[in-house]
Length: 326
Ligand code: ACO
Image (cartoon, rainbow, N blue to C red; front, top):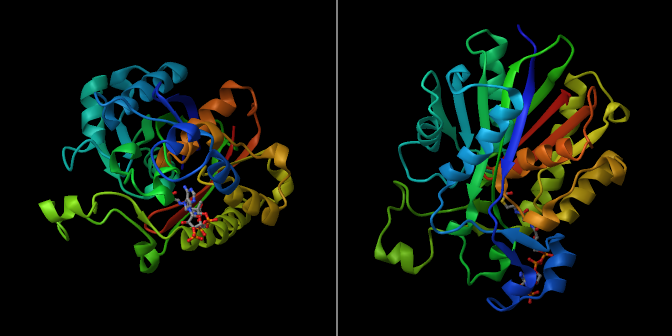
């Protein structure tokens, strides 16, 4: 099996910023409530003219440039998203067209906020076995299109963005050292977008009842997030035969500062090793980890040979963790 690592990263967030103070004018909330309960101060909102594939295209162009990859080199595109442009074609096929990736296979995965890490695991296996040489993995969302902007308990939490990486063979002992994926479908009802599929097709009634938007039991998701992220991180460390002392940097899914602090505390990872940018972007679901990786790398926080632990939870319910040597 070939060793696999990330050879390029890129991200894109829309220009328009929606602050907590802007939200105060839209729903019965306050900057103080949102900041203290979630850590979020603002989020980016995609312009009406943009769809998820556009955000993906911008992020992917940067990742390909970073890796020095030409369009014809890409063998496979995997996009993790729960806000695809349309039911089909997949967003991956739209991005394949936009970027002229004429030799690439393309598909989307639906794993909620754990999607980018699932994408890394899937993409790395195609390279490990020799089936592919260059895989483009993207996490991207325009969650602002599927929020109920009159529901203060969800609309304050999310933002739009995209992050991408290129996976290729790397030196032995580097790159993706271990990963763990999991799911608990029995508790999936805690986080859903119920309408628009075959169970509940779009109708005037589903639109009136706002069933095409995010429905969440925040308290249950909170408890699940803390438990699942701690467990999957420890399992992945175990698989990599590492301890928490070996970790130079922790990048958790950016959903809520209190979730991140609880997980870091349970894992006994000091604050300075934990990357946080949710204050600026809110929860960008599958985009949150790749955008964080891109920012951490460009700020010089992740350096050559650093051991990085990525950990996420999401709709499904799902969880995932990846350990890599940069
Ligand atoms: N502004 C003001 N008050 C609010 C707001 C708001 N935006 N939202 C809720 N409240 C009120 C509630 O109505 C409630 O009022 P009540 O006591 O009069 O009924 C009160 O604040 C407390 O509400 P709780 O839900 O108990 O607040 P909590 O401290 O649990 O925080 C939150 C809610 C932030 C949603 C939290 O539960 C959370 O972060 N959960 C996890 C959410 C998450 O990460 N989801 C991931 C989503 S998707 C993904 O990552 C796949």
